[in-house]
Length: 420
Image (tube, rainbow, N blue to C red; front, side, top):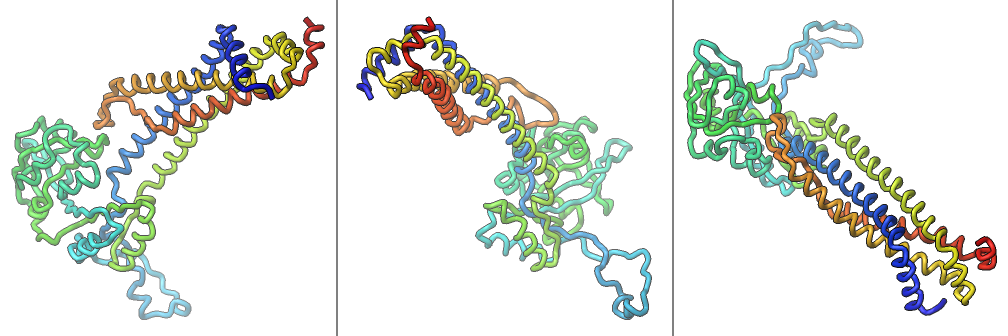
């Protein structure tokens, strides 16, 4: 093989001698890689947004009492099913209290578990919102708002006011956006509610809560846990749900089974609670990568065609180089170096293009009532997209330069000159 510096000089000279063709090849790489980065960043950003809206607000394990039929009926204790064959109609569920039995000790045990990041209790009560002579059905959830903010991004859904007001003032409520609109109420005003026991309460509106789901925002509000227990007329141990967040979400399924067997309660894991959503998320992710890969393949063929024509146009140069003593390996090295230079320049420009357009998309306003926490279009600036795009640019241009160069290096220079 000839001197490497000489080969580099020849490659660079040929590349700059026909700037138009070299520029077109670099632009082909730039647009292919740029579009790959833009599409993948935007599509995965949208997927992460939708995943976050559900997963960030969903506890990894929900503990509650569930009303269900008694597994063993009284008649089954007295009769031999194989002989007497009793027929039992209208099987009723066994009587269970509304609250979780021994909720406080269960919470204490969970907080000691090294797998658990945090635990929050809830007390849910049915109420009526008073609107003049009309009563609107509603649900009030009593929560420990500071823990809800820490574990489940609760603060992101408070569109007006301050969520921490629930801790500062006991008789404060975070009113659902739909209810606030129906009752023409705003932050600082008071709303009248009546619990199922008929006792009225006047609650100051400390904030407006908007989940993005109209059927939820039309009925649901939040108060301090102790306030909810007071509306229910129950004690401090009245807890209807326990929400648990783990450090590793994958542990939710086996841990929920363990909790059910240990405490005789129902434990719903996040996988079961969001089974349909998780399937949709997997399909969206698959489509995102399929579309992006298709863009890369199309760009790859375009880059190959451009470099193939570039090498074909330099057949005279190949003949002269071979006639002056350069070997086939030298010819391949010259055109591979040219291809890699085009790949590097086009790849860098593609990264700049992809990042620039992604920043522009990320700044475009996107306001909708369905997604109250979203203000602009979502974009995922994951570095692996840029690394992957640049790596593909180098790989594609290497192959696009190597394959035609290998064929050209085997051609007899006499045939090239005779053909001209």
